[in-house]
Amino acid sequence: MNVYIILICFFLLVGIVGTIAVGMSKENREGNPEYDLKTKKYWTRLTLYYVVSTILGVLAVIWFINMR
Image 1 (cartoon, rainbow, N blue to C red):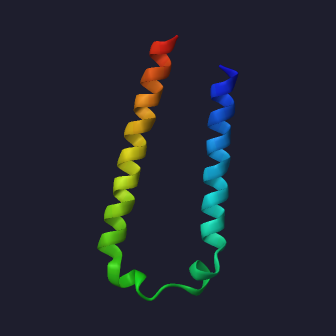
Image 2 (image 1 turned 180 degrees about the vertical axis):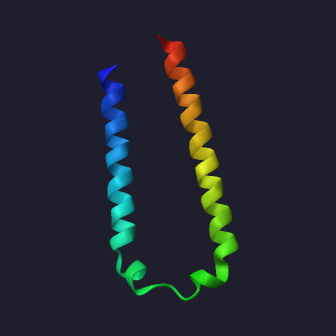
Image 3 (image 1 turned 180 degrees about the horizontal axis):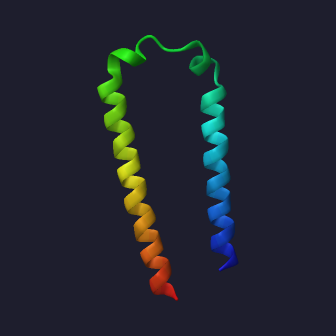
């Protein structure tokens, strides 16, 4: 059980550090003029990431519950 908590905390910290790194990046601060031209592509990809991560998260919870 402790191993799972450590893994969850690890991935949580990696996600936080990654998000902060992207937010503080030089490219993000200066802006990207092409970003506004490709919003549909970015929204589609971002939505796909959220759907996949939500499904994987739900499957992980179900797996964890069944392991008990």
